[in-house]
Length: 124
Image (cartoon, rainbow, N blue to C red; front, top):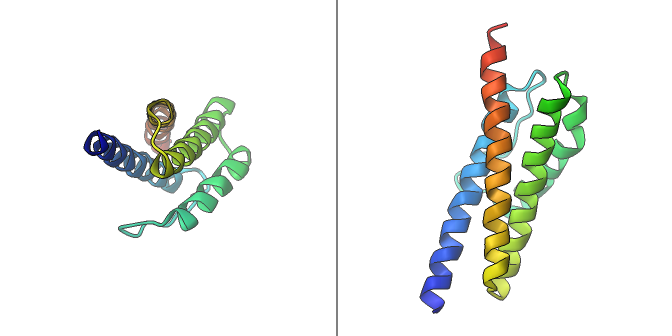
């Protein structure tokens, strides 16, 4: 059972990294670009405050309300997934892992929609 739990945690860690990369890319395309830490392995101590800061300044970006909410939603769900992952790492509970995965799906969807909008509107 521990091996299965370890596999789930590894998958979640990879998904967190993937969604963070999408956030980094989207933030680089914002009307007022935001730089985030991009080292190969970003410790949570660096990533979490950066993600929180992006969520705090999302409404300051000169873009529509839908795009602002996509950025904010992506950040909030990514932070929730990281928190649930950390709890699972200490004491694995499948519902926490499933909650982390669900939050990652919401974050990824919101950030991909934002990134698409940014790419389309970059040419303007």
